[in-house]
Length: 358
Image (cartoon, rainbow, N blue to C red; front, side, top):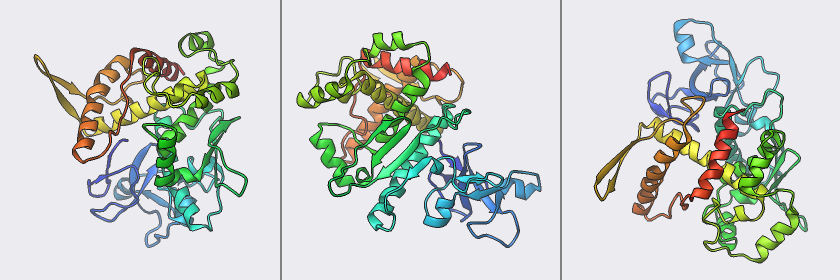
């Protein structure tokens, strides 16, 4: 994610910040500009969360600027750090309004889980917005339902007809780790789930009528094969230890071409997000080679309308080597437990080309 500076004091602030720790100024991310802003009351003397706000810089110079309200979820629940334009009839920010169904928030565990999930969803929204996919001009945005298991009614995470469903138990670290081990997955996160399921949504909205289905089928396989039967076969033959690496980003990607696409889509979002973060810190690396040192400077994948995929990959590999080495130094598992093959890179390139031709 991009890092930001407080408009008031210049101190470093972050995507999830709600207040500058240096000067105490209220902060909010402005979805219309995709930037973090320091806010002051639009009416001097008023500073309740439900009041109108404007950017510090505009207030300081007396210039006209949009007025904002804080997302209602911040006012009512102490979650969300997005703002809403004052003339927007919606009380919720563009990310929060996409959530259609919530679990019972009177249950403290569900409230905690929901807050964690919404945080991950805001990060997904930001990346999709940076790619020009949100908010969609035609209103074709994904809808989310966050549900808790009921007796005899387990909730399955998935996508159907534009709706992404997530079992809120995935917000519990112990439950997510249990499922990760049971399913032999090296990587399982809330954000990863949301990115994967958004891939199914964008298969329908970007690929289905793009005129590139034949190319998709050549690279990923024929999605017209029986989906339920393919998943049954996949789980019956688990674990898949290493047999998938030549052509896929994960073992689950072998289950069906739709899952291959969604896993690859999620991986592409991992890539652009991490590269943007590294670029915002002006990260440079030198990797030791037999003949000396190879230098790399990480570029921002959102700096141009048509970023060079080969350049992104060239920066990605040493960046993930550094990332994993730092994690191991702290006694942690690899943050990026993958090694991209030629086949997997071809699929990532397909996603990249499709996104940037829209």
